[in-house]
Length: 249
Image 1: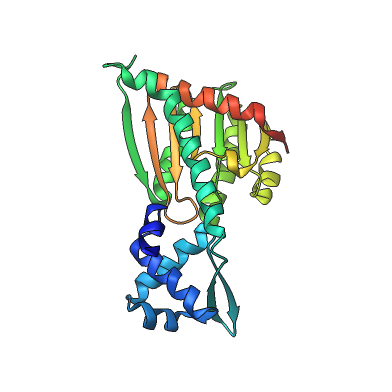
Image 2: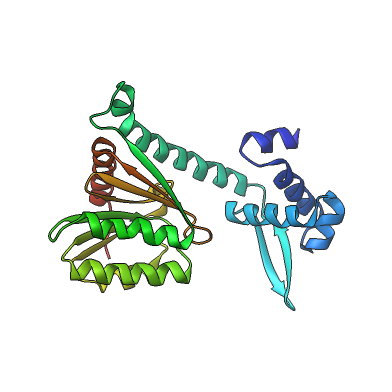
């Protein structure tokens, strides 16, 4: 019974086993969880990490050893509410482009490319500098943090953007306070913050007739580059709506 309900709200089989084990064991080390669940060590660690990200498992470190515990089951309601809000935001983004997708042929052929890893980030964002001219504008919505390597690249990117006279507007999730402070220091840049509940499912950057959708910048980056005027304008319109709801930094 428990397993079926937990699976319906989005937990995987291993996440369910680990979570239920923690409810029984209480505050404990990984070894005890492995013994109780009989799940391979690496899969237990993966499940714990995902449960922590979902906010239903916490941990502390004692003598360099991590100890885990399940939060009160009522937190599952909060997790479900957050999931619902995310789905609602995804629906808003989808509804913005459905009229274009419904037609048999878009105004122009859509071209999609995928870039992976740090070098992929460099290639994708260098396209912004190649595409835009002095006085043009790039719009970005930053949802999550990124690795130090990617952060250094973005700082260098903004210096090059300044030199080329390209303007920028960025909406940042309000929990990325340090990043907001750094971004405000760049010229030709306007920065606003928004409550994370209004954030998009993924960070994105719109420029010219292109949109970059980027994931995993805090781990292993993956970027989708879509070239299509209508799709880019749909994301641009969505950005303007959120810009109007956001606050100056």
